[in-house]
Image (tube, rainbow, N blue to C red):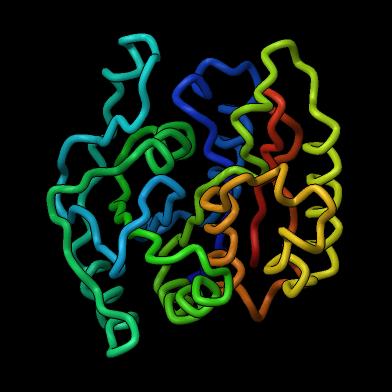
Length: 255
């Protein structure tokens, strides 16, 4: 079985579907990947401790946003559940230091389904979402390491966030705040040199880290992806870059 890469992607928001470029980029990315046996998503929009495993059957999506047009609340993504994957995740993660809970009614949130609608529109691959139990990059790296064996079983591990995420700096005119461009450049260089220590301490190592991420939940999923691909970090690459509403949409593949 082909070993799957691990991904960190910027997931956008429901209007991503209307962008003239981004959906095609996500679709092309998926077409370039081996077909997964299942997809495991860790999204910035589900923080819960202890670590929670979401629905393993097909349940309604979580429309965790407000103020959008009605049509965005009518999107569906009825991917099969992944009970076998859930059992493997429990086995890999559950110990005295990492208790695991089940939340069987919790469907996919927009950090999971918005990109998956573009990447795998047929919704025919089992999908499982788990929560982020912490925002501590080192702990998230360790969770990623423990999940890494799933890659050898064809599971696509996806950390879903946004490479910069300062909602007060959203730009609808196509401009890009200087701190967004600066952080995107800094992050690109840190990734290219596999400087994990700098990325972990990004709030201090980048002069604009706190502006790019006033709260760190959208950068945190990166560390799941880095942990799961730790032995291949020198081969990581940015698959998508550029900006959307003034935020950096850099998305990477490891392996």
